[in-house]
Amino acid sequence: MTNQNVMVSESKPTIGVKITVTLSNSSLFSKHITISRKKVLKKLDNEGGPKVHAWVDSMRDSSPTRVKSTASLSETEEQSSWIAHHPSALDKFEEIVNASKGKKIVMFLDYDGTLAPIVEDPDRAFMTNEMREAVRDVARYFPTAIVTGRCRDKVFSFVKLAGLYYAASHGMDIEGPSKSRKYKKGNQGVLFQPASEFLPMIDEVYKALLEKTKSIPGAKVENNKFCLSVHFRCVDEKSWGTLAEEVRLVLNEYPKLKLTQGRKVLEIRPTIKWDKGRALEFLLEALGYANSKDVVPVYIGDDRTDEDAFKVLRNREQGLGILVSKVPKDTNASYSLQEPSEVNEFLRRLVDWKRSSLRQQ
Image: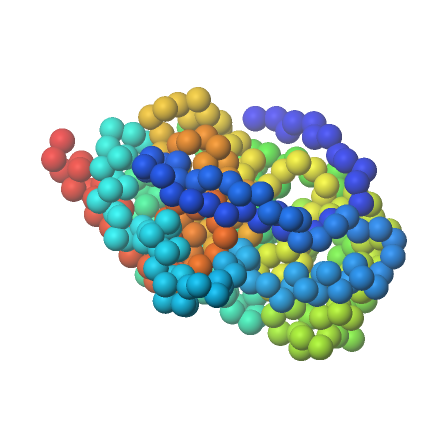
């Protein structure tokens, strides 16, 4: 499969934090009504001041944005209301698999916060051996992709499983197994890299950010090859404004890069129209399921960047999104799980269901 040309916009960097709210209806795989909401941040210009303050305000929010409490609802009532619209995928497991009978399930899994817990040091975000076994077993029965903002080499060093699809750098670096041979390490092949022309620019910005942030305790810049992550989980909140200003000064020189926000991280990416949602669509096409009505894509993720994939599934009216979160959050997902341990249980139950189905054939 050859790389495709991608149009690059000349817009200035923006913080991409589009927020949507979802409601439930009777359809299993399409449970959302999008309610537009005022954009959190305006387009950046060359000025600082109010723009940086807006960045910092956004940095304080969790990801996705937590549902704001209302005076009429207690915290318990709010949680119950949210769960009613985004029920536990474990509680609704039978409903999910019954609707999937006779169809091909394709699994899409975020990494941080989904397969591994969020930790202070991103280099130590290790998944458990139990989770690795669960993912390995899922991949035996269903095409499985890891969709992550991490670079491909880093996430593979964490997952350590061949035979999966890896959509790294928010889907800008997609690798998949050879279809002509058994899945073995070394048989993976690059399928798509839509942002290759940006590699020199990304490297320049990485070096600049390392220099600019080295005096801010706790700040960490991660090079994910086709995008950059500026982690501020370990930065004192009093220094967030300083960090945001340094990032802004660097990005002012690179109008072909944009800034989006994840979970305690600022993400710097090329301004191409590509995200986890488009990566999901690309992989479905690569697998031959682009126009199939007999496929059920299942996407599990916890971050704002996963909302792009949840939205694609909602618009397709096919498949289901599962948000990993302990608290009510605005999301396009249909279902919820609270933490990676519940993701593990869901994957295990899916494997057991598939094995039982095969024995009955």
